[in-house]
Length: 388
Ligand code: HEC
Ligand SMILES: [Cu+2]
Image (cartoon, rainbow, N blue to C red; front, side, top):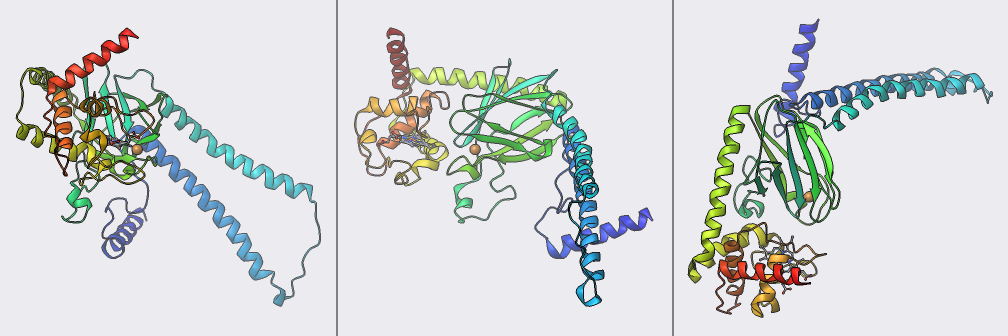
């Protein structure tokens, strides 16, 4: 019997996959994912339990309804009863739903409490959402980085064919170990975002000024993908999440390598302060930084989007006083989507992108800005803050 059932399922599944939905994943074409953590398994079981209860209720309710419609129809000579206010019936139809609700609430509460229990974690990662990227910071490890969409704008604009992970790929995935309890602290720099990875059954709002907690413990190594699940502005659909779950020793190695890599980058950034680049070098770096980090808002054409993001082409700031230009890029403009890039980009990258903005699209200031200029600007504004 079981065998028969299984092969019937397989058959219907195959038919579905083969004919109806070739584009949908073959394993779970319709249902939610079972995921790769104990909690996601519990959530799935809960989902199925409630689903079966709903099915049973549907069968009973529709059964009685159709039975009544068919067997007590007027053409058969049925005469409606005229009673009302039956205490017995009212008690029954109050008590039964209450019992069903309690029966559903007990396992649901258990799972919810387990999901909230972030105690005894092995590592903590802070996740900060901002328009439109994620920032991951490993507590006590000196490791932090930004994670941005890696899909090329050519794919998005339909010039190139879309890749297998279209809009679900990033430059720096979050890397975590399996078998260890990972606590996430979540917050936001600007508007509400939501960090959602279905395979972990983790979906939590990141709210500016608040810190939310979540946790996961992954059983199976692999690459897991998710998305921001809160409408957070124009490029909401362009801030995917990619998590790379590794074997524990592999993770430890990655962490050690990453620390070295970040330390090396820091050293290079310091060296950049004493070296000067040519206009061409700055323009080349600036072009890349602009496309990666600024064009979502200010557009590749530099023309911005009227009413939302100002044009850089012909802008007063980008053609006027250099300090004002450095200021807005370093410190952002609070209360607007123009964020502070001081900690997101190196001084050299900031210098390059400012040079680029001042010498592209007909902005022809001829100004060349060096990393040391940015560093000096930062120090001067530190000092003036202290002086106040
Ligand atoms: C999330 C959207 C967003 C991103 C990304 C962004 N900006 Fe902005 N930018 C804005 C907004 C909004 C303003 C207008 C702020 C205001 O109201 O004063 C602005 C203003 C500016 C201005 C002043 C323009 C003017 O004439 O008023 C400059 C210069 C600028 N941004 C440079 C940059 C650079 C450089 C980058 C990339 C490193 C960047 N922006 C990335 C949203 C963004
Ligand atoms: Cu978001």
